[in-house]
Amino acid sequence: MAAPRPSLTTRLTSARLVLRPARTQDTGELCALARKNKTHLAPWNPLPARGEDPSSLTVVARSVAVQRAQWREGRAFPFLVVERKPEPRIVGRINLNAVVRGAFHNAYLGYWIDASRQGQGLMTEATQLVLGFAFGDAGLHRVQVAIMPRNAPSLKVVEKIGFRKEGFALRYLQIAGRWEDHLLFAMTSEEWAERQTSQP
Image (cartoon, rainbow, N blue to C red; front, side):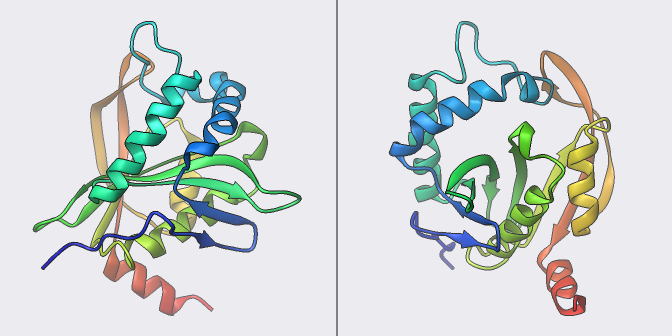
């Protein structure tokens, strides 16, 4: 059976947010957001390639092109997190990465939000939208996420949503130049459906 191929025109909406794939015309705003959050994101991201500035116009434009190609090929579903009011503005990203089909039907969840928008429940709202998409239009069976134990805001998101803790991975990913331990969480489509029917 062919894997679902959601459209690049996909839009996920909630009371405060619109989630959508990046477009070429978003490049300038994404550069500004990356520059603004450079210090905020540095402890949680892999080091960039030597001499590469992740907030430069060239790098961001290339990233947008790669992400759109991955979406078309069904290999990843990266979304911009756009706050709707007082006027639409990009405040973060949330991605379903490394999509594997076959017997697995799995993706890896990753997300970040503007430092000034933390603590307002926006990423919890965005994650709920993306899980609905993952287990709906994208036809996935499982979504998993790895979080460093000291990343309290990210841990709070998965705990509020009800991800199941699966274990501890020693020196799992190289982040900011160091091999970092991660806590592993997952949710399956069955667990998601059960949560949806049990919520008021």
